[in-house]
Amino acid sequence: MTDTVKPEESDVALRRNTSQTTELTESDAAAKTEITELRKTNIALESRNYELRETVRQVRLMLAAAESERDQYKREARKYKSELQQMKDPPLVVGTIEQDLRDGRVVVRSTTGPSFVSYVSESVEPETLIVGAQCGLQPQSFVLVEVLPNRVDAQVSAMEIDTAPNVSYDDIGGLKSQKELLKEAIELPLTHPELFEKTGIEPPKGVLLYGVPGTGKTLLAKAAAHETNAAFIRVVGSELVQKYIGEGARLVRELFAMAREKAPAIIFIDEIDAVGTMRTADAYSAGDHEVGRTLMQLLAELDGFNPRGNVKIIAATNRLDMLDAALLRPGRFDRIIEFPLPDAKERESILAIHTKKMHIAKGVMLSNLAELTEGFNGAELAALCIEAGMQAIRSNRTTVKTADFAAAADAVKKGREKKELRPEIPEGVYL
Image 1 (cartoon, rainbow, N blue to C red):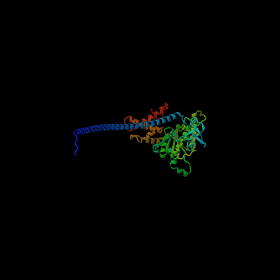
Image 2: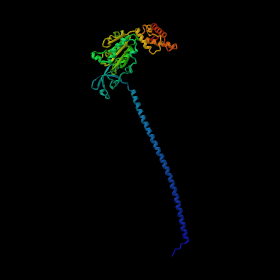
Image 3: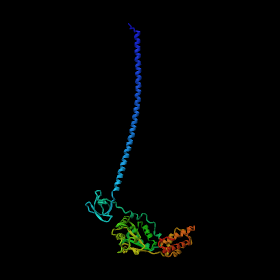
Image 4: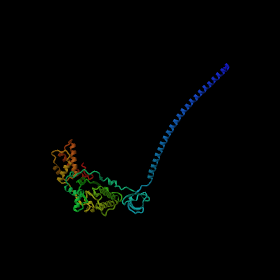
């Protein structure tokens, strides 16, 4: 039997279903809206999180840069503090080790003069305490705090000529006997030492060249160094004269020590009369006494108390009469060579050398010029050629004629006469 539904009941059920459906639809819409809002909030939070992470990364980079800059400032501060401390510390006194007492003390001689028994700092290695080495001393306690490197004085190092002089014997006119004597005394012992060993004799130690100015003494010494390919050390006698006590003698010692290291070497002492003047009892000034000390050290080195090896000495002077007798005895300067004024034949050879590169007219006779320049030295003959070239240039010519040489000879002779009337005119200036 089929149940019969009443119309009233079906309407109520339909309304109830419709109401439930409406409630479900509104709930879904609200849920969807809430989900959308949550998604937006999540996106905003993720964006904010990324921004914060980027900010943290930038801050970390800035922090690292700041720390690096801080470390740099700390290093600079330490450096400036160290420099400031060095500026505040007094300078060290330079001394020379004379004796090692082997008990943590040494005998040192300071540059101020006196000697001291000083203690050695613990930072100094014992094997560096060598007699003769220079050291640094505290100015108050004179404690030895540093051993200075064993270097040659810069003034002595500057005396060495790095390249051999570009002067040969062929570039020097005349002086035939002087060349032979210099070759025997300087060149032969350096190039053929076996000849002296077989003969059983000692080679000459030094050569002294003397003569009037401009006769080729320095030029011949350069030629000897060029022919032997030896180290050439040139020093002027006045450079060895120093102000403080012992400084000149120290320069002489270091000069010969450097020559022994550079052997074979030639020491050329020009104007030796500046340091080798005759000693007298009338010396009263401190300067005279210091020159005497330097001379005594030079004599000791010339004596060969320390073996010199292949080191030869050449000295030159214009005033042989001023030199001390101790310099002139055999064993120090074994050869004393005179450089006189050139004769006519030698003057012709000198003129041939100086005019070798000049454009000379065909009628110029060097023999006549040699007769015309009686009494000229080598330097004046060189000045004669230069002046003759200037005469040609003054006339807008490149060829030098006999008249140019005659005018140049007159100019040199007039320069001599003016020098006699006016002694203040230096050598070689022709007004």
